[in-house]
Length: 361
Ligand SMILES: *Cc1c(COP(=O)(O)O)cnc(C)c1O
Image (cartoon, rainbow, N blue to C red):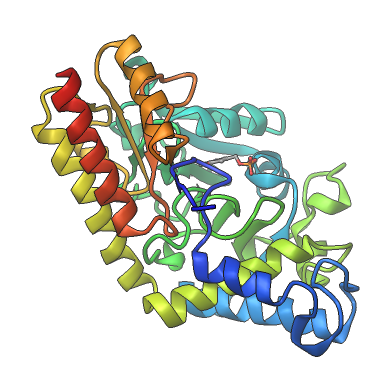
């Protein structure tokens, strides 16, 4: 059977060489006589995998010495609470920018654990852009300032970071981690669910500055306690072993076959440009995100006619371009073009859109 071009927002495509390597190693990982799914997480052979995954993530992302990398579970959504429980411990205040559904959920969840303030929002414009900021709204004594760097549902992204002074910047990077270099030193904490750009679902990555790991709020579950997880090298309990293994293979692919995150970014920018250039000249399709806020990972677009949108989604799927239906809260279409989407997948999609426009324009 031939493989489709999968534009799913997550879980999403994985690089073909990674799937092939995992398949080749499936029954007998490096002479161990077992698959990675079956081995003890305390075994020597698995220790090699998790240690290498950690080291590669630090190397590829350029994570400084004074940051911990944690491999957790529960998805990015668990971090909406964990961040608040671990970091909202001094003034018990935190500022949030509402740029979409996930940042709104993070704000709502954080509000259960302290005084959270929405300092800006673009909800009135259906989150079609990153909101304008008014720094006089920021609270200088906040324990952290939370943003979502790439808004998966709306196809928007921050292109410059807010200046929060000495207040640690916390970012949900679920849908843009590893898509381009990130200057980790600008952040107190980064978190991401793995299932968009890193690995299959099950792994949640937290990169946190060591001085922010302290005594969490009273009542914080042990599994949410960054200090406990850091002290135990993410092995307090059984980690998501398989997902961490695939994460290692994906990092090897980025490092050895792509050539690192700068090369990854160049490839991703080019891919997105092909799609946006087409949308900008099309008489049928229109990009949804405001130009200054466009994401290179998730591209949202509409025809302006719901019936035509539905026909496009149906016909594109039949032609081998699957999961192009937009999120239920936005409608229209969304092409998620994460790292693993090859450039020819985007080129062929544009060809298909062109043909669709000729037939339906
Ligand atoms: C997918 C996504 C989430 C939710 O992730 P889970 O791992 O399913 O909890 C949160 N934030 C962003 C930006 C996402 O893209």
